[in-house]
Each structure stands twice: as C-alpha cells, then as structure tokens.
Amino acid sequence: MKYLRFFQKGNIRYGLLEKDNIIREVVGDIFNNHENTENVYSLSEINFLPPCVPSKIIAVGLNYFDHANEVQMKIPDEPLIFMKPPSTLIAHNNNIIYPKMSKQLDYEAELAVIIKNRIKNIEPEDVFKNILGYTCLMM
Image (cartoon, rainbow, N blue to C red; front, side, top):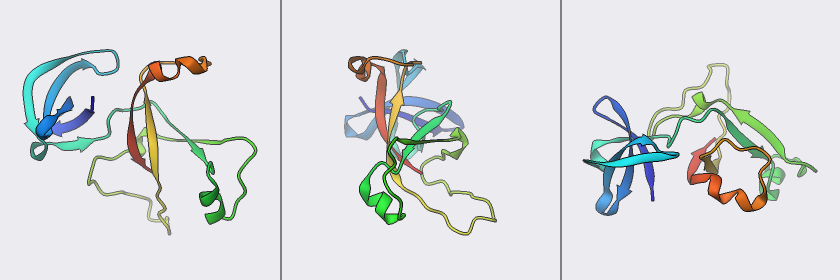
C-alpha cells in the first residue's frame, strides 16, 4: 500500500494511492487503525505533504565511503547519529527557507524509514513488524 498525506481544499488528509493515480481518503490512525472512505481525489487536486508528522528525525552520518571521501573524513568507528527537528520538513514543491547568515546550502537524498510503534531495544526479528513504510527524504 502507498499511504499519502496531502493538503486538499484547506484540509490535511491521509489517503491510499490506488491504480490509475486515484487517492482514496482514509480516516483514523494510519499507524494502527484506519478506515477507507468513499472520498477519492486525483493527483492534480492535491498537494503532497510529508507522510507523517514525526516527533523527531534521527539520521546516521558518514555511513558510506563515497560521502566520507567527498567531505575528506574517515568512516567513524561507531555510527555518527544526529537529529533534525520536524520543522525541517516541507511539502512537495515548497521553497527551502534558511537563515540569511547561511552561505551554503547542502542537501542529500536519503531513505527514510517510518516507524509505526513506540519501540526500544527490540530483537532483530521484530524490526519489520514495527515499520509502517519507507519514503524519500531530502536533507
């Protein structure tokens, strides 16, 4: 299933992308319990939003050789973890706004994993049942 979060006629909605590029609106909690409605929209009627409003964005840095070489740094012995605030997310085709003091704006395309449950210290075999889905994330 392909879940979407979108803006349509002044409202934020969730939906499922169906064949022929039709979006079927869903109501309820997309993470645990939702229902399909009869409301459908075409892609031309909506503005895409980030798929959810996360409480935090946790990222891993310098985790592949090409990027480390590009920035002239060595791969760290342990993962380099950093956080970004949810306010850094923007809707599709929105402008990136950054402070005037910034002289350079760098970006990377990342694979984002949407976690559906509150989890901590889980067993490896339990990982996939706690993932809602994946999306692209520009950072």
